[in-house]
Length: 577
Image (cartoon, rainbow, N blue to C red; front, top):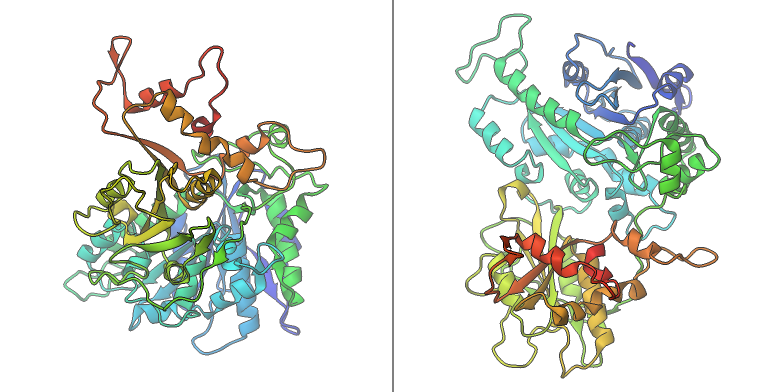
């Protein structure tokens, strides 16, 4: 098919109108959709970039509104590729209401959102021209509650890709950017002072942010490079285009609330609902829209995305495996008492980095008072809220006096300083301590590493098992990787000490029980979607990893210890993690 107009502005009213013919083209797409949308100022080559993405000539017209082009996906045969090309916004202020609505539609419909600008002056100023991003948290809500809407939005928004065009050719800079995995945050000049600046909003709202540089397609004749002959693309531009194409076409298909992939029928109806709401200046409640569309419908959507790229299950299989009502990730909230007003002393910022939230030394995040009451440290919370990068959270838990703090210091490659160490028989760490650092791994450049050191479990002086359970539960809920630390070997005593895991189902509920109660094991099965990776660190281990005369790996040693023994009850905890 050729590109057709999908959404056009109504000149008399400023409202948006959907083209029924384009909706019909969308509705015949039964496969998962990879939706790539482009937005940016006028005259920056947006249509040209979209045409080159699929190796075509001049396909997209230069016309108002949003144009759609449906194609077979060039690398994923089980998906359909949907390209959205939008009219550019002018250098001077135009119809801001119309442009804001077009921007919101691009973001809500796409799985990859491309912001395209030229390199003119300070590049970050070009990013800050995207003022429409401020409207996102005001207009779009995941739930009808406004509490922490920005955090919920980041779980459903697309990848944000900034394409900076017509830059001076610089192969060295391109190599550095590629080594940084094209992370946008690493290229910004400095943290923004204004909380509501467009660049700050982009960092706060979009979960994945990338930057791709492009020289002029024909070369500009400067900087020592040759001008390409007419009709030929500059070799460096072709190389840069290849990197962008590899990334843009490799991303996951479009999903909605609940991480469910969608087909063309759902996307068409989803678009109509949103246009209707935007034209009436009403807020967009995503969960309400998705649930309303699916109830009583015959969509082939609703299946979870396969991270390995496999085909979706049949509709019957998806219905049997998943509840029909889409639900966002919602964690049961336990009210923690705010700590008493404290002096506004923030952790020292490491002088070697301008990364927001980076700390020279740990500080207490959750205080454990003598009477067992958990209290949030407001200074630590404020520091955590200043982090605008994706976070990798590693928490450690285990019995007291087993060297947890020492292990976390080694993880941070710190020989001196770091988490405080004790040398007596008394428990040393109290509550949960936090340490924010730039992630040391090159593949995680642009991420913040958050280390959580927790109070040791089983302290005889405290003698409060309930308090221990809450400390352990917080470590589980906050972390992306949970390290369980123990000494010696994995024996029955070590297994018995994991009773904190078995008690999680009593302390944490994935959702409110349905009428008639929950079936046995239902909570445990759903916990897998929420719980972190589980790592068991066995300290001071001196035995040979050998079983039945053959060498085994650490993982095999763990699996053997967790196997059910005949005549014994199940050991559910770590298996279900």
